Length: 279
Image 1: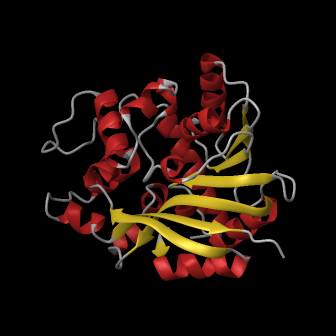
Image 2: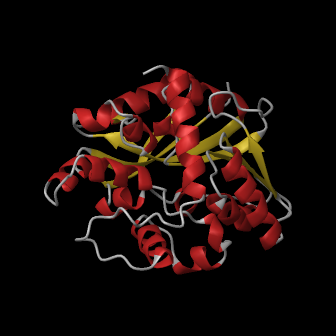
């Protein structure tokens, strides 16, 4: 599949997610889901967010589609400038804004206009003065060189089929001694072809996943040092089923209760840290 077509499909897919009031309609009957907000809350807690996190961010900013909590692992300091790659409706940005304070700044980058629009609405509603949301591609960041203290990302880089370029761009915009903390999806074993070679597989954060060693190698090639795996865990099955695109894969392939966990076991959630050391 052409890389530009993949990006276009991902953008269209995530535009729909913003408006997914009916997102649970395709969930298999064996899952007991009745309230969207409760499902999002349960998923968020399962990947590391606290009640306090969810309470202190605008409700509409948490879409329940992350795979970790980079803010909970990153050591954010007052006055820092934070960049979020693929910021969605702004959930992690708002949490980061609490940590960096009014003397700092948080910038969210997302290629989906509908996501950026929702994030800006959430920022206005929550009266966040130190948060900015920009439409842009993580492969071509509209950010100055050496201007960012910390870059975070949550289940987004796996969507790109130009990960090496994403890593190079992250390295470029970081200040000397700046750092990254990415929560992402990695591949543990081969995915079935009906996931790997479909549009839905890419949009659902599955088909674009790569092996851990390839992820680390890509960061090293971009110039990063001090790479550490902060967390590596099983990918919660309920997370996959919350994603409406993943639900489509389940529905169209008539997957059973046995087959769904087999897909989930092919991938894992990872939180990875690295630094841009002074030359």
